[in-house]
Image (cartoon, rainbow over all chains, first blue to last red; front, top):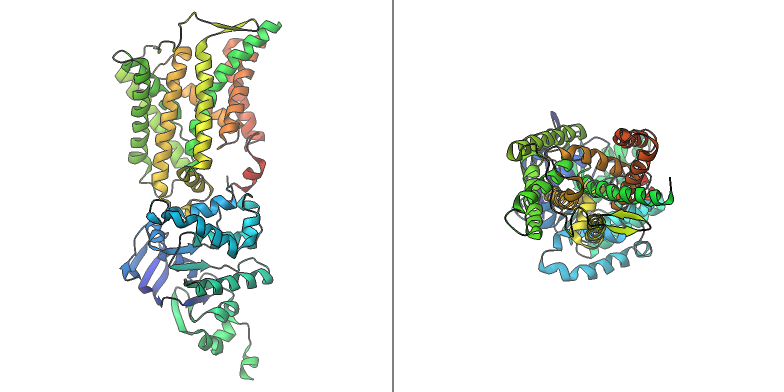
Length: 244
Length: 296
């Protein structure tokens, strides 16, 4: 579904991604784990066109999307749930969701929008309860649900989630991750970027480990969970417990 | 002040105030999608007035006004296309310099196209001496035209912003540009649209007020300052706030004439502007809830 080869990008004179190569197959949950500043967010921003790539190629459904503006990439079905939610704070929950379906508003698919709205409300009943409330007044967890719901309204083929667990209570994180599993069972492909490596590898099929702008390790989620380097660096186990 | 006077001041204040309100709405439209203040807004009024006055010599008044609105909207669109669109991440300072520069260019161009004579459109109904009397105060029917236009613009804009997808998308751009483009909204097109729209509204305002205030190549600057004050006073981005604040400023100005000399009328507005900027930069009518969620 998504195939990225030797991708390089950055901000101004700062080079962040140094030749990233990853792929995601249809129907998979793939996670990218890594520390702060390793380039995970930049990778997602480059895929969605917010940051322009300097080299390499991004193929989405065999189509080169590198260098396209974000609005075209979204229209092709590649949707990002950005870091820190980024809901439209001064608009209502309902309006946020309607804007999410913007790319479908001029096509024949527009008749299905009300139906999708109901299915998002079914997925997140709390949003339906608060649909007249301003998005900025929601709690962090609710805003995360809204951001996911908004992205679903575009009927994306690939959903990319950037740190969905950030700043949320463990019980909410659990709920969000359950939702991600549900999304996969509904036929979505998911790219999950997380600092919470344990939770992410817990639901993912495959994973990549990113360090200072390049992929240093890849494998199935099981392999990564069993990998000693990963255990030490990202799962909080020390040498001693690994030795045992 | 006799009761008659009070009504008279009130009416002349409301007249001036509704003019400021329309200018303020123009500021708000562009601010809402771009987060910048377009200091050439006053020039759109001047252009609207001037073009309609010229065209009114060849065609009936409504046609001339319609043409003036369309032409000015085109100018607004071109300005965005040529000067604003190519800027990747517009900083506030850069946009201020660009729009102030543009306002000077437009003003000077108008001086060359038309000359420095003061002109005016004919009164829409009746003439200079037609007047309506309410509670002993007399005012021109043109005042009703100004108030009516103002009300209709606000109603239509509110419907546009809250009930149409394009309007909602414009609000989405204002709320969060990155997220808006992640939802598939082409931000640059929204900015073009907002410039076109605010130029059109400015031009329409320039036409309705022309019989009262008269139109000259440099009349935009004063109107822009008054309108800007109303926009800030009402809370940037709120069209209802702009109306209330505009009317209030108009009435305060009109009332000040009875206490201090006429020459200080403009100083009153400027003092008010400074006061608001110092003490209540969020405006006093802006939705508190929304203002708290907004990034300034």
